[in-house]
Figure 1 (cartoon, protein in one colour):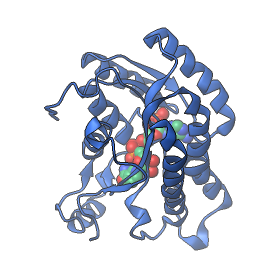
Figure 2 (cartoon, rainbow, N blue to C red; figure 1 turned 90 degrees about the vertical axis):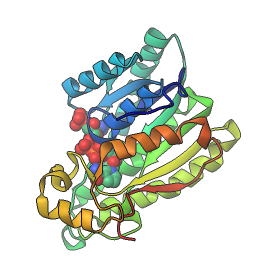
Figure 3 (cartoon, rainbow, N blue to C red; figure 1 turned 30 degrees about the vertical axis):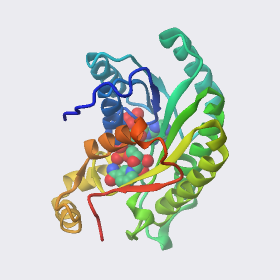
Figure 4 (cartoon, rainbow, N blue to C red; figure 1 turned 180 degrees about the vertical axis):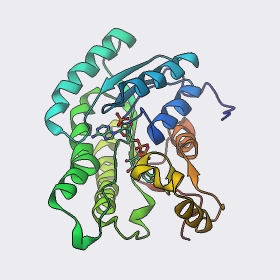
Length: 260
Ligand code: NDP
């Protein structure tokens, strides 16, 4: 992965939820390559999170890893406390610039079989958690900062088995517009990035590891292949530069032209 504008996010500090693996990891690396420092968060894979921190440090940037259950609203007070300590200790700051609400997982089931437990866990991580984590962190986001909420191509096209998941992502797109409206007076932009199918551990790694699914996705994609996490990380890093300072309240699909 090569990025020519390596310095245009120098001095910026980003929090990327769920950045021990997948899209969050690629986003963190792409941001660090452009000169940003990163607060990495993980749910349980501390070792993976530490390896992302080491990779960011090798790029010459500062990073720390914090544990966060982005689906547990009751943990957000504790997370905010740990975050404030990390900001003070590592950056001598009491604020950060970018929040990327990325953490998530899929529980797939047709509408006839969706359980209430699956619905609640999807709602907690993809919708309720995003609203209340952002609410908790609002006092720490710098005026002129940026928020990116990760949605999904599945809000535009329908994939059987994804009704509950995609509905939460649809809610995030509405929430994105409301956040943009309410935070605009502080100069904060808020956008939703909607990836197509990407080769990560998501959904048991199905898009990456199942040759039939991989081939079907590539065949349904204008650019003729499945997405990789760097496709999303590079786009988000670019969205967070000054070149996109006037972009807010948008749903931006990053799918290589899936199901056109
Ligand atoms: P991965 O499974 O590769 O990575 C998930 C990341 O989220 C990990 O860092 C994981 O931490 C973290 N995580 C999982 N559950 C929680 C939780 N409860 N609280 C905090 N962190 C958590 O997934 P992707 O990178 O593929 O997905 C990232 C986002 O992109 C999700 O919101 C997903 O819905 C969305 N998306 C993904 C697509 C795809 O095809 N991959 C397509 C469209 C959208 P740990 O390592 O500790 O488990």
